[in-house]
Length: 72
Image 1 (cartoon, rainbow, N blue to C red):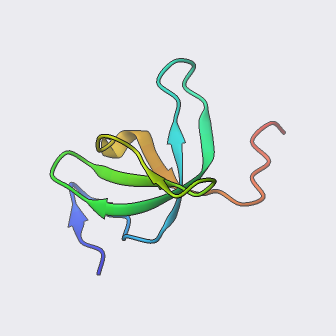
Image 2: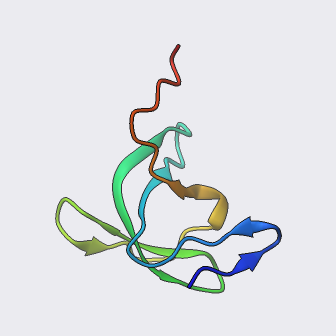
Image 3: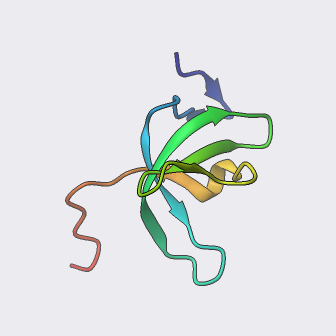
């Protein structure tokens, strides 16, 4: 069950998400929330089912945006 923290809805495990690239700031698809931690989110890459080595801050993870037309 998703909790409320700081006014933002928390992403539940299994939610498809995008992760912000730390170098250029682009959002990358192909990740799923594995678990919620005190530090942020532990995420799994869907291409090879690898869980990233450390949790990502909440600001670096957002719900996957399907059909986004951000360029228009």
